[in-house]
Amino acid sequence: MHLSYDRGLYGSLLVSRSAGPKTEHLAITGPHGALILGRGVVRLLDPAGQVVESLLREPAWPCPPAALIDRFCHVFDGTATNPSGPATHLPHAAFLAAAYGSAATSRPAHPKEYLA
Image (cartoon, rainbow, N blue to C red; front, top):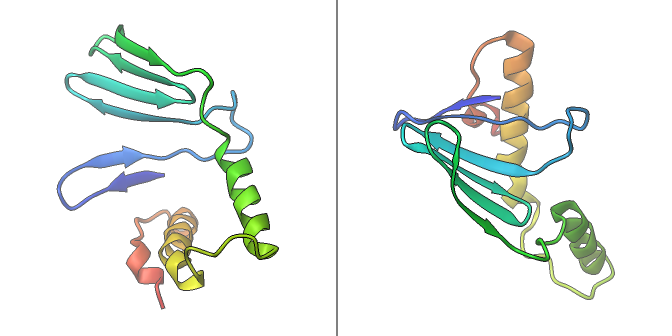
């Protein structure tokens, strides 16, 4: 998914259950290099891709899907409160609908077009 923002910023998002290797990371790139955030590691790279600085955290933070499922189970059994109701997630659903709509039409789509 390619993203563009009113302020002239652009981004790319890849979410796949089949593209390997299995990783979770965020890469912020610019003309002076990149900041890569991964599970338990943060790396600062220069424009040539060489590591300028690296921070390692042991143990790495917990797996987000496992934490979400655990939280859902606690809300479901009444041992935790639900911090956000269904209406809170409508923008997330609109984002996904826009992504699928854009893929189907091969044209850009804005999530606001999918909010009812």
